[in-house]
Image (cartoon, rainbow, N blue to C red; front, side, top):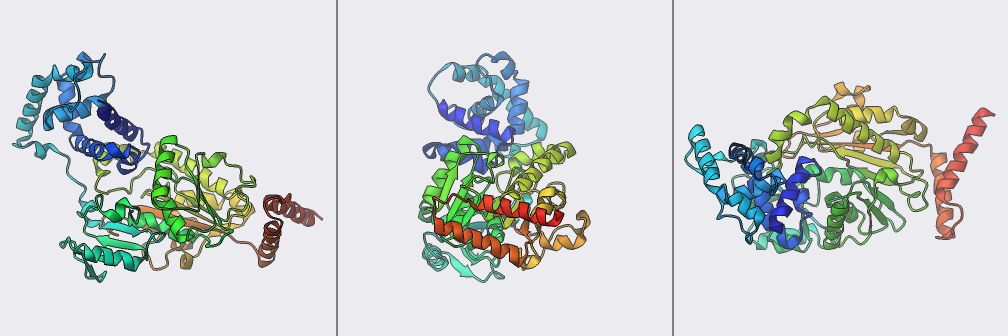
Length: 481
């Protein structure tokens, strides 16, 4: 019965919008993951029908002492109606459902007659048609092998490498290199790599193309002294991508506040052999920018909670229909935008930060251009001399940019990246990049102080944060004088 409890918990967390289907399933113990995944996905496909059947049978009302969760009832009734029964030992909860078996089957037949269908499969939710236009993206983990080795691996598996312009979605044996992300390969949407040795060993990571953009735009340093923060790391796709771009050099602080997701993050990073990552189970907003541990961070990646309105992949369409109205609800969007702006403003307080990437998987301007617009006018941006990075530094070859009509300065839209589902062969996504615009003299002074700290070593009693703070005070004194 524990298996059903685990599946019900995933559904509970989905209802609370605590993650995507794929992300939440990844938190399940690996030995139970495949089985749980199948039950969760199948239950979601039939959820509207199952909910109707449970209501008509008065199951929750008559068995309220045993069935305290609707989602637990959903997974159990699913197996009663569409599988070979509940796969668990006898017990009070199982008996509570089986007592209504005849009535449940009767309600199922009524629904099939009402809808004019003969087969159970005809009652399942249809897939989002836009998902079929998104290739199966496979990111090569360059910490373990290079792109040429990966290509040879897939060729040996019977795949044929094609030119990006010639790849056909009708051929499941063709694959191609992506034109924007060097470590990304494209396959037919129906290809699965869950059982591939390269996936199991961490050599390849299944990651949507648009999700690869933030790490590439951040352009983290490749240096033993490099310091980077991934503010919301789990499940770890973007973190592992940053680690690969850093060539396992320097330090990458991977923050995740949720304990379960933090455990998933550590498992993935270990599998991907990300040796320069320091996982931190903490909320980014509680991190003190002046803490010696983080005061020399120069690059920060922000991919905070959002409405998820751009997600149309092969799984999340199952919950999209329920959430569609809520995702467009202005009040919720504005609450999310307020939180997202808070994250950006906090990132701007780190004394040595030079580059901040803010991204969402939303298609709403409220969470995208409007947040960027507000961030540029914030006290933190003005005092820290932050501006948007030019288009030349933000995927210049990507054609779709931000909405100029949503920006105070329409020219700023060129610095923003947008992806639209159904049109760009990706999920919906938004990427922006803030850079600190300081003079060469100030930059030189900062580099000198940082060099001095490096020479003094870990026992230095003059941290960079204090030096920068002192310089700021002196500058203000000069202005007043």
